[in-house]
Image 1 (cartoon, rainbow, N blue to C red):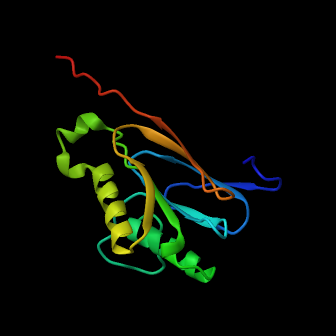
Image 2: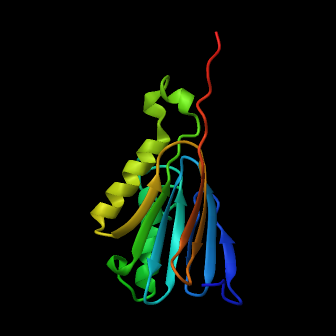
Length: 167
């Protein structure tokens, strides 16, 4: 399906959440961050979040889209505000690419990408969401285009080579 006349495009920066009820293309660029797309196939509405970290130690108000659990909560609230149930949405997960794979050997506890992936999977399970696709892990970055008028998500993944250390 071609892009509808009058469709808008929204670019999400890290920590942002967007939900739309009209023809919209959501776009973002991910490294170790993860995006969750939310699409209602009957109503052709939905949204996307771009979270940076699995969570924060103390919950505070207002909710902050930089954290996985809070970003998902914002999407869930948008769904409810539009008279829909979260379980009626198709959910897709993207990102979690290691941006500095050579550091993982030296600092395995600093693996934000893997922690983000685990958080996204755990949240979809905890909320009984309908996970229809995922493209997570590996290295490098991903460009995500999400068309709300048909639910298609386009992914361009640019893996990185591991840098060789020279003695």
